[in-house]
Amino acid sequence: MSEPTDERRAFEVGDATHVPVGPGNEPTSFNPTVLDFGHYAGKTIEELATEDPDYLRWLERHPSGVRYRAEIHRVLGVTPRSLEWNR
Image: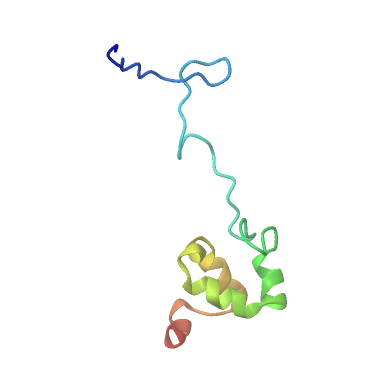
């Protein structure tokens, strides 16, 4: 049996041989006013305030809603501490 060789090397991406990948290498397109995941992907926080305010209250408390928290507070007209009693 032959010994396995360790041939670690960068893999090619398109025509470039060394293209950085991963977070921080491209500008973000995140919009804190529009959900980008789940059942309500594409809906604005303002639309959800009318359609499903209970979901927004849940999202405000959930880790996946951290990015949207300021906009949720603005739309619902609450301060961060006004929801703490319900946590």
